Length: 394
Image (cartoon, rainbow, N blue to C red):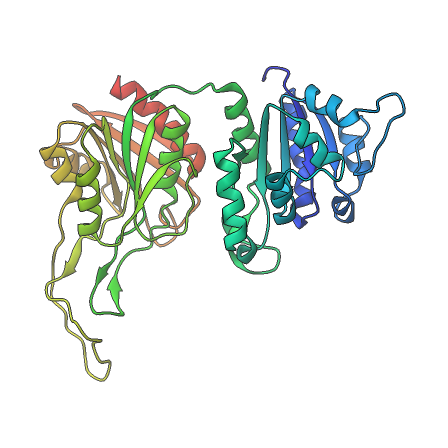
C-alpha cells in the first residue's frame, strides 16, 4: 500500500478518456485519495457519473462553482500532492505551456505548486508536429513530468508515437515520482545497448534481424528508475525509452562500437542487450545490385562488441545470448569465451522471445551459478533483471 497521497485526475477530451476510469480504480486500490476534474470536451467521451460512482465523490466540471468556496480552484490545488492529466490532449498541452486559465482544470493547474504529470494522447502527426514538440520540451525544462506517450496502433488506425500509456504503467510512474523509492544503482553509470544493427549490402538493401529493441529499452528504463545515470546506445527501432535517458542512435555494428568507446570512460556497468548482426558483407556495393541475375554475396564475421568491451575495459559487463537450442551449454560457453561477468540467455524461435512483448531469461555467472527469471511482460522482466543484477554486482 502507498502512503495516503492526494491526487487530482484531470480528464480532457480525447478518445483515451475511457481509460481514465481504470486509472481511478487503480489509484483507489493503492490507497490514493482521488478527486476528478473534467474539461467540457471530456464529457463527450465519458460521463461524470462514471467517476462519481468510482470515487463516491463529486466530480468537478469545467464550470463548477460552490458558493461557500469562492476560491475552489485554489483549494483544490493546495489539497493535491500531484495533478495527473490523463489523457492530455495537444490542446491542453498548449494551455499548460501558456498558462491559460479558462476552466476549472486549467486554473487549478496554474494554482498548483507541486507536481504536474501529463499523459499525452493524440494522433502521431499531432504529436510529431513541431509546435507540439516545442511545447513538450519547454514543459519538461520547467519541471512538468511526462508519462508517455507510447508507440503503437492508434484509434484512427495510424501507427506511431502518441498513444497514451496503459493505466498501470501511468500509475507506476506516479508512484515512482511521489515516493522516489528506488536507489539500487544510485549514481552508478550504466551503458546499455538496444535494438538491432543493420549492415548495408548496397545503397538500398541491408542485413538485419527482428529485434524490436523493447528488452534493451526497458532494461535502460529499469536502471534509470533505480537511480542510475544511463546512456542508451540504440540501433534502428521504434520502441520508446524514458525521455530522461540520454541516448545515441546508431545503425551498424561499427557505429555502435564507436559510440560505446567514445563514451565508455567512467562507466561502471556495460549491458549489451542489442542484437548485433553477426555478419557483414565483405565488399559493399556502391550501386544498387540489379535483380535481373542471381545474387551471390560473401559475408565475413562482424566485430564482436561484447568481447571488445569486456577485454579492453575494466568494468562489470553483462551480455545477452539469444539461443534456439542448448540454452545453458551455449550461454555458459559465451560467458567464458567473452570474459564477461554475467550472461542473460533466452530461448528464441519464430514465435517466442524476439518481437514478443513477453520473455523469460536465465542468468549465468561465476562458477555454475544460475537464476531463472520466468516468463512475463518485458517491462516487468526488466525490473526483475535489474534487481537480480544488484545482488550479483554487490
